[in-house]
Length: 436
Image (cartoon, rainbow, N blue to C red; front, side, top):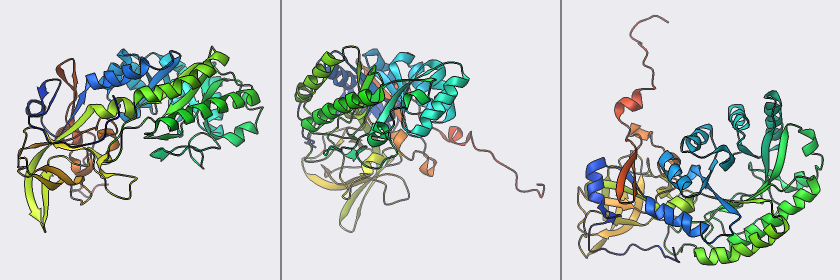
């Protein structure tokens, strides 16, 4: 967990995870296949918790990878859970996360989701005045009160994130100016227990100084809003956004340097507010490095001077590999998994089985020149925003299998979709008769 540039260096041996060869995993579970290294996940979380100020709680953002076993592993290691849908809430609960360690976030919560949270006393991160009114109505109807933290869209923005979530007109959170102009807000919602503030500035931040600057400004904003609105600082959530280096020229955050810059902000705030829970939300950072998307090459071909390796899986399982949000297609790190391959390298376009030219996992990727049908190609750093953030039902291929390797043992944590499962929820009508 040091500064690591993204590279695709040649290897002299077959690739493995915790001593288990990818070829063995592919033979056992089939391809396409997601493989997650549980030891890497554990190292990411423990590396932060061991260094961070002891008052900081880490909440795992299930949106990054909502597999129930991944959530259970992280919870067993000390992570809480941040969820954004009813299914994610149930996932966290079934993974063993207690209500006091779950928070529900998202700009478009349904009445059913709000009701489930209020009934179980799950913390709600409120993103609009309309939502606050709904929470108050639901809680009053249930004869109880709801724990609520206000998400703030701050007036400031911090540069250096892959996707900015605050500082501009957004669907996320309540504008700082609107909150400061409404000191009677808490009094109008008697069934709501306002208990703090949350700010999430952006994602994929790869600069330690930006992470620290975000945190300091968010803590300052929380204090100002608390004083203005009379809201107790039971909890302050500084978001997260710690990035993963995917592309050439990027480097991973140095965890030691990151925490060295963060802790003084937490320590100063905790000295002034010793009873406040301090929260960081982390998703991609905890699981991104752990994953490999393994596909098997079906065909190799040349087309007008370019080499193509057509595989059995593509962007239907790994939409992030398309490079959404980038003007120029950039590749995730990729490698040959099942053998060393020739020393000679060649630029390959690695594509999937979909009927669209956009189904390109990698463009002009340097791989061994002797790549051939049957080879396994792996897309590294694929543990976050994989199949659940992809159009897995396009062409009715369905979900791939997912495997978690932990303590030297490979566990199937999601079975592969088959045709019967894909069709089970569809309803066939008989149109051969003339009856309505």
